[in-house]
Image 1 (cartoon, rainbow, N blue to C red):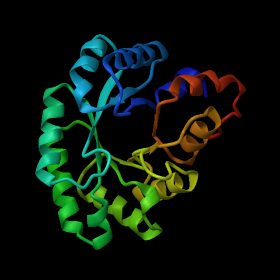
Image 2: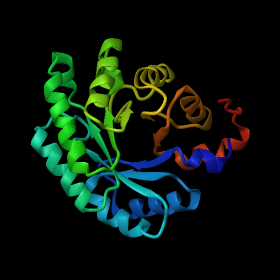
Image 3: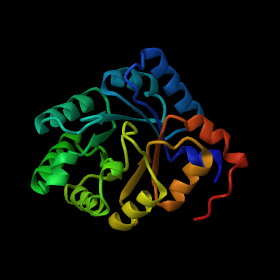
Length: 225
């Protein structure tokens, strides 16, 4: 896999709370220079990122209900609507983990369908925070996300005790099938791990280390698909 091919898997990410405008500008400049698929940023920087990337092929993704996923459903819907109005082209929304654990599946489906509707045909990636879930809960989360008609299941926010693992990506891919989106995110800092995630079934990689990952392509083992 070439650096250019790998770049098309990557959402170049900056979600730290102290991120300021200059860092967003640097993120967008890097995304264009390296051909990343998207940038993923917090909502307060959406209009700036859309302005900086309006003449490029780089998409602008933003987070909703981040990083806990436990706010009122109406808030998630409004946040999605506001993000679309500000220029978001993809939505990364955090699942309500408490609802999943207590078995409130109907509430999860209703909430996610509201977000999908508010996204107005933009891709919705649902973050399930795999580090907090049992095997059975990961499977059920995937099934609910498919039923809600989102487009991706995503492993992690990167704000919890563990990010993406190879085993989790394999599991999610086995549940959702070959055509559904799987985004591996959290703790992916080097080329070998990024390639391993793709080989395991990830169709997108969320990372703040995209530039370093591409720089390591020449020395990384060849990924075989």
